[in-house]
Amino acid sequence: MRLITIQGDTEFASVEQQRRLVSSAPSERDLRSIVRINAEEMRHGWQMSYLLVQYFGDAGKAEARKLLERCADRRERLLGAFNEPVEDWLDFFTFTAFVDRDGMYQLKMLSHSGFGPLSRSMGPMLNEESFHLLTGLTGLQRILRAGKVPVEIVQKVLSRWLPVCYDLFGHERSRGAAKAYLWSLKGRFNEEIAGPVTDPETLNEAARGLYYKEVQGLVGLLNKEIGDGKSKLSVPDLKFRRGIGEYKDKRFSVRGKPLDEEAYTRHLGEVLPTESDRQELRRLMKEPDWIAVAA
Ligand SMILES: [Fe+2]
Ligand SMILES: [Fe+2]
Image (cartoon, rainbow, N blue to C red):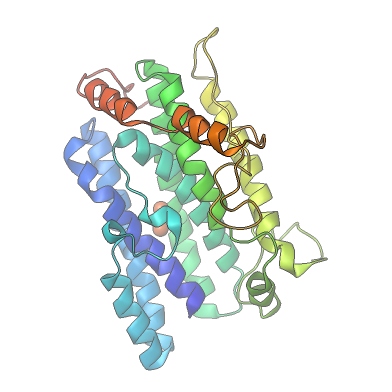
């Protein structure tokens, strides 16, 4: 019930985070994409609610009700990334490319669940999810191709979102993750090829490692859109600005270098989006050519 509740909570949350952007879509096609994504996230939320109501008695009904009562705008959602404001279309594409990708990892792990109604729910959700990931990645490619938004600002937005994605995988060592696996409530992302489990308490870390590697490949793809001689994007270190686990609240740079308090505060001011970056984005996004036309 807990696993389903958390999954459902993220689905409704992402609708709350994204819905305001409907009025600022850069094109008709982007408008259709965001509406489709919102509708599908809503459907994922209902699908999880259905499982709670159908299979978990009064306790499940109470949890399903709470899925609709909590609100991302009040930062009441269960996982940090789903309380973060999605402020503009650069955020939206970054969110769908990287936060939804984390969601896809979770769905794939749940697709191995021994609880049939849950694992059978995952196929259709995963199909829809792949559209969200593609929308995000191609959106970022189109922004970089257009060359109007400074790469430095795109980098700052990546540096803001990726640490919360790393957090979504949970603690490096987790008894909860071990139990979920040993009780067959959840599998591994790469279950088919992963071989025997040596230490079930490290399954979160293994999933995060796979995600990190995939993200590096995707950022490599994004870099192909950036002209020669310009600075390229990089993936923030796993220790940077973490809110969960071993590195929680510790002071590391985006490159993973330990910093003292003063240097760290200065560093955050340099590597995360500032109010003036947001202003510049708002100004740029009023121009018609800030993002390339979808292929
Ligand atoms: Fe979803
Ligand atoms: Fe999604």
